[in-house]
Length: 357
Image (cartoon, rainbow, N blue to C red):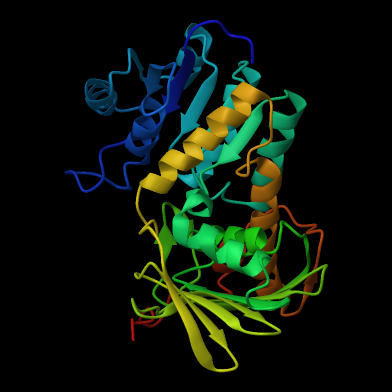
């Protein structure tokens, strides 16, 4: 990009800091802001939030210069290069579209992409049409444990990778990280088909979007590698990610930054890495990657193409449950099959949610 002077960044939806009174999320706008401020030659120019008190608190904390309650007015008034969108998923698509149509050069959006497959495709298509860089905060890609796990696999420490496994609370909100991670491990290879089954026991809803309470999802990639994701009832000592190869297994557990390498049933090595399993340091790396991509005219790992691959797998898993059969890709539906099944009373929130074992 050719702007002289600082990169001008804006925020849509700042909310309240994590664990503060009245907070309904993780305060991701504050995490984004800290990541921008750690970089050189950046100005936090403006923020928009429908609650004026949220905007004032955010501006006071981060030094953001202008405060709006109407994001469209902010986009018209401020000459913004980049916008962070930190709202609930059903607003991701319309707000992203508003930003890129207003001329913003880059949008860094929270995950998951959107509340439906059609909305996810639409926001990516509009960004591409307007030549805007659209990235999603799958920040775990940059965490040291996951990077090291990828590097071990790519170096052949477990032989040729045959199967990748993941476990997490649900396939949509948390699963977007884990499916994205499996795709990264598999060198962004497209999936060929997905088969899944779900339960909505307990009626789980995360940031306004219904999520499976339990599920099992099988993925076949076009290079023959298989993925398996199980959801619900996870405990802290469970194995979160596992890669099975022709010569061994690489494992990473939920809350321990140690990679375990097994060969023929025997633990060969325990590799301790920096504890970036869940922390905000990976968000700093993710925002830096998105900013560098804009400044240097390159593609970010967090780009819409990679996010679409993960999102398609997620909605295909839900569509498989609706069809009661395998779903071959590309995915042809536009809605959210899980939400549609709930609306049609094909899934009910009866019973208790799965408990941590």
